[in-house]
Length: 170
Image (cartoon, rainbow, N blue to C red; front, side, top):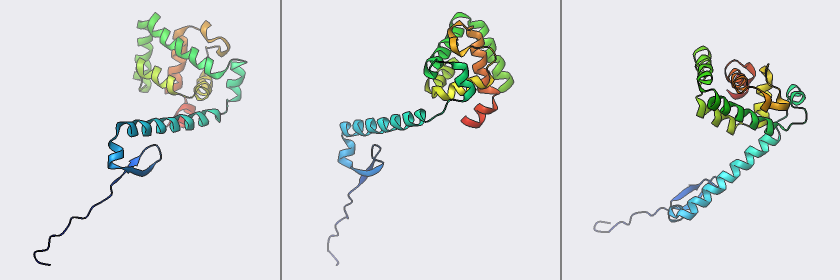
């Protein structure tokens, strides 16, 4: 044994493939940009598919269904987003006052960009269900006839004082 040269053990390192969730990529494969992009694309596709399935299976609350009439929840939710953005564009001072009021009173965690991002990423049915839960001012059958500041205030109420929102989201 003395004087014999010992060879270092070799390991076949396998790396995690986010597309399959398994460690089936060799180090060489993982370093290839196309393998990485493909794995990321497959993972993103899988996440979109899972999200779409969850969204399809979310029921509309009876109160929200009645308030919408024949208006699809996704269309009404987009109109609510437009009105929130419009509140900040057309009435920036008043919109800021509302945002500051709800932040001070209820620790609203959103600024304009965060508010619009949250609304854009939320399942429209979940959004409409929660919006209608406390809604006192906005006609969901014709959102665009509502005052943008009223829509903003109702969204802020949903995010801050709604026990329904708190129980579903947190």
